[in-house]
Length: 256
Ligand SMILES: Nc1ncnc2c1ncn2[C@@H]1O[C@H](COP(=O)(O)OP(=O)(O)OP(=O)(O)O)[C@@H](O)[C@H]1O
Ligand SMILES: [Mg+2]
Image (cartoon, rainbow, N blue to C red; front, side):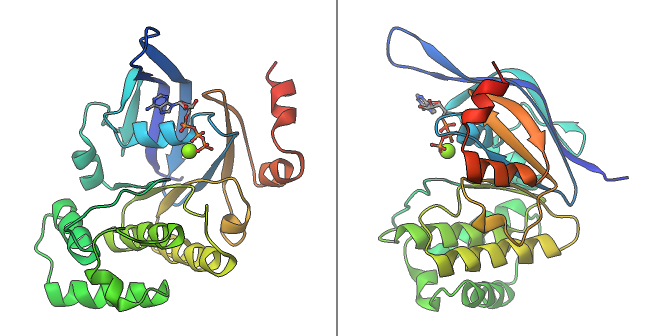
């Protein structure tokens, strides 16, 4: 039987607002279970709460977890910091990656990797792996010395997120619209990168996307539709086709 990796139970989350409303509840009673080796896809209209869910799984302090629990490898991680979650094998690629001046791509990834793994990493081995992965992602090797995302094009930032995923080798990668803004060739390169990651033993991925291209060659085990902060439907990959053809209007009718 497949082994459980991540379990989210009855999770509700909000953000604090500066105005008199005080706070906005974004996610309501989310339940989700991801086993080792599974591909989960999340779709849903803009503003439905997909990125919020990804951020709450990583404990982004911008969001309040109001109720519910998160388990990783059956251990309650609800109170753990982002750092500790990363050490336990969670990774998230951002919809809007941040720029970091003064830290090169290579140093950023090497520091993250040595924080996550408790062992010392051989610099020679690390550089070799980084070079190989960069070549596979069609990144010129000079990018390794550039400051993280500074002056990167939208597509380059997204490819850089995939580079981080491949180098950090998490148990579960959460990819938030890693395909948005990519040209046709870059989408294929990113999809191949996800495939390379999935081909390793028992890797799991949670892909947030609006398009089918990225998951064309990656067969989703489950597709979830998030609508108004709830997972309102879970199905197989036929749900992706339906969304492509019909958008989300039918969901509104179904959940009434
Ligand atoms: N920091 C914040 N402050 C105020 N509102 C927020 C904040 N973060 C998210 N929201 C609101 O919560 C809702 C869900 O946002 P979220 O980014 O999770 O949507 P999404 O499903 O990822 O959308 P998209 O497909 O456009 O990326 C939106 O209405 C958004 O405006
Ligand atoms: Mg989003």
